[in-house]
Length: 279
Image 1: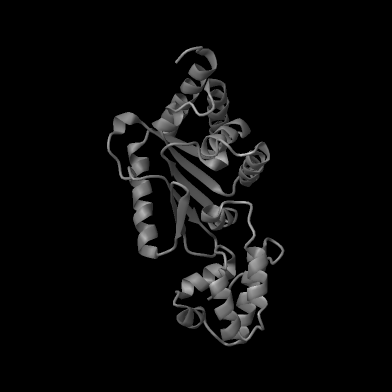
Image 2 (image 1 turned 180 degrees about the vertical axis):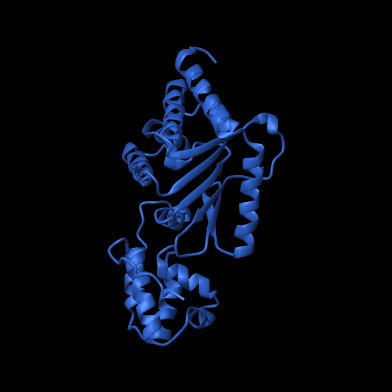
C-alpha cells in the first residue's frame, strides 16, 4: 500500500501544523486511530488534521502536546493559525474549501459566495449589517472576493452549483446589480468553469427545503458537509451524516433543470433585469 503523500508545509498554517502533527505522531509510534482515542475523535479526524482539511482547535492542540510530548508546540502555533478574516462560524469551512478538489453547493436564497460579483457581495453584507461602518463592509467584501480566486485555476476545484429559482428572482442590490451578477454566473458556465443548475419553483417540494448545503471532496481526506443558518454554521465529518447530505444534493439536482436549460433561464432573467425599468 502506498504511503501518505508528502505535505507542503508552506501552503498554509494548517498544512504546516498537519505536517508537524504527522511527523510527531509517527515519531511516537502511534497510528491515527491510537492518537484519536484519548482525544475521543476518529482516526479519520486525525487524518484530516494532518492533511490540512480541518483546523486544529486549541483544546485538541493542548492534549496533543501532552500525548506526544511536544512542549506546547501545537498550542502555541494553533493560536496563531486560528486567526481568520472570516466569521468564526464559517472560518473552518472556508479553509477546507480552499483545499477541496470538488465543491457542490445548493443555494436556496443567494448566489454562492464563490460566484458573487463585488456589487452583489456588497449588497449582501450591507443587508446583513445596515449600520456597519463602510471599512467593515469593505473588509468583508474583500475576503469574499479573495475566496473567488479559487476559480482562477481552470480545472480545480470542480464547482457544481444548484441555484433555487428564488436566487434569480430576489433583487439583491437592485436590477443593475442582479443583471451583472447573473451574467457573471452565466459566463462561468459558458467558459465551462462551473456546472450550474436551477431548481425551478415548479419542482415543488424537494429534499433540501430546510436550507443550504455545501459538500466538499478532497484528494487525501474524507469528504465534508457544511450547513448554515442565520449567523451560524456547522462543518460535518460524520460519514453517515455526510452520506445523507450527498443523497440530498443528488435528489435536488435530479429535480433541477438541465445545465443547458438552466443557463438559458439565467441568461433570460439577466437580460430582463438589464432591460426592464420596472419589475
